[in-house]
Length: 245
Length: 324
Ligand SMILES: Cc1cc2nc3c(=O)[nH]c(=O)nc-3n(C[C@H](O)[C@H](O)[C@H](O)COP(=O)(O)OP(=O)(O)OC[C@H]3O[C@@H](n4cnc5c(N)ncnc54)[C@H](O)[C@@H]3O)c2cc1C
Ligand SMILES: Nc1ncnc2c1ncn2[C@@H]1O[C@H](COP(=O)(O)O)[C@@H](O)[C@H]1O
Image (cartoon, rainbow over all chains, first blue to last red; front, side, top):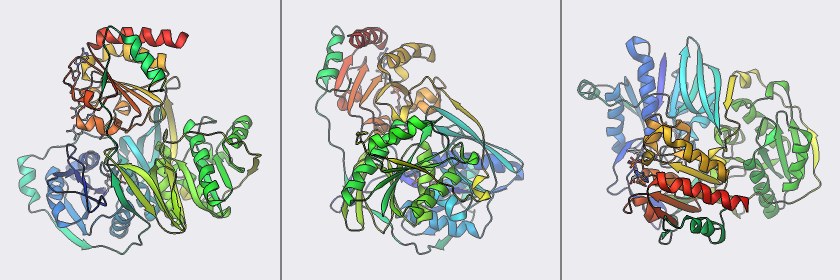
């Protein structure tokens, strides 16, 4: 089975989120980047499925050279080879078009993305990819099992789950429950250095949308502390002051 | 030209977020002086269908094929795009629900439209260029996104706009789509849904608890409080990681982002990754025995105390309130 895992390079979850250039651009000064946590799940699942010669795992990242440590980490976790599309990942539509352009010629059986990237939270790349490659896509998978040509996927729905049978090839966005993220071991780290990392040029994609301005949400006023001896007061304030009950 | 709004239902009943989407579409339609067409796919009761007129749709288009009884990602995206083209809709609105998130990009790609996902405000327009606001960086920022081009798909965040009544004399028409076999390849084997629970992404009130609850056996109190308030339950990441609660309840940067009117956090420290997913809630109440817990810094109301003492009293106080 040929598996492609799409990797997004995102600010560490403890990063302070600030903006520059008149609040039009994310300020990445001093920010640590990590593999998007959901993509670690996708990667772990792919490595598990390919284990013991049952398949190959290629990782792809659309981004600039400074993302290479993230790509090498994925190779250390167990991917066989990597591709970097050398371009600024300006939005999900652009990214999905790059991945689709690469994947078209390659006949992957399974394409995994994370459920969403924790920076732009689009949940878009996976649906765009499905459409661009004219194959099914499943968003927010909670489990994934393969039986020959058929895949059973549990998809998250409001208040429960839906069990789906899909056929290959397919694009699936993975969430918690699909696999436990893997930590690279020493051997993985050593071999990652020599695994192939191919850099390719981007294809042109028309701009349909762009973020023109960022704001940080308004700060809350100081907390009103209520004594635990006077809990009725909280109920009262929620009703009369906050007007939420 | 027109605005098309896709309305999602669960077992034949429209969701609250679907009504929000209709009301949003109506406001967009009013801004650009275009009629609003609502689209329902699958089997829905007549009275439910008629109710859509209450929220301002001029026409309701129903698609009710045997193959489309249940939500199928690809097929539904195809039908929505096809209907949009047939009614000349340049703007498609839908709810950014779990299913909505799955189809929105597919619809946008089919229509060659700009995708504005997770909108939290009405668009501002200047000719063909629209802007919407949405959250980014897991609620740590609000982004203004410009949607260029002649068409756009807007997925509305549940709970961000109210479903306003706007009664119109709505007509209902059925439509027969052209389905391709490729669109129907996915098979739904089972749907498991807790029918008695309030759905977390749409909930107006969320009662959430963390490691301070000590163990899964103590969640009865949390659930009781949620019951009294008609709230959904949620939890912090370590709680779902430990298997005390299902993953679907985990909120935060790497879990679900929620925007209820009221978020009650019990025994949760308020780590930055947790706050990322909940800080856009309108009102936040924190109950924690540690007065130094970081969560108090971003709360509106706080009680410093042991959850095991405070919760039973809080449940009683809300019961008394509800009974009056
Ligand atoms: C990459 C990454 C992503 C993450 N994503 C998320 C995420 O999406 N969501 C998330 O929640 N976390 C996330 N985390 C974890 C986060 O950093 C915190 O570890 C987590 O939120 C802590 O959970 P907690 O508040 O339940 O537990 P703790 O931090 O252990 O806090 C328990 C709190 O309960 C209080 N308490 C104890 N006993 C009582 C009592 N009897 N009565 C009242 N209060 C009591 C304590 O004072 C304490 O404040 C992430 C971490 C990383 C590294
Ligand atoms: N720059 C990128 N390069 C490769 N894959 C990406 C990139 N950005 C996002 N993805 C993939 O798409 C998923 C969803 O991202 P998004 O649609 O932005 O929420 C991520 O979890 C990744 O798997």
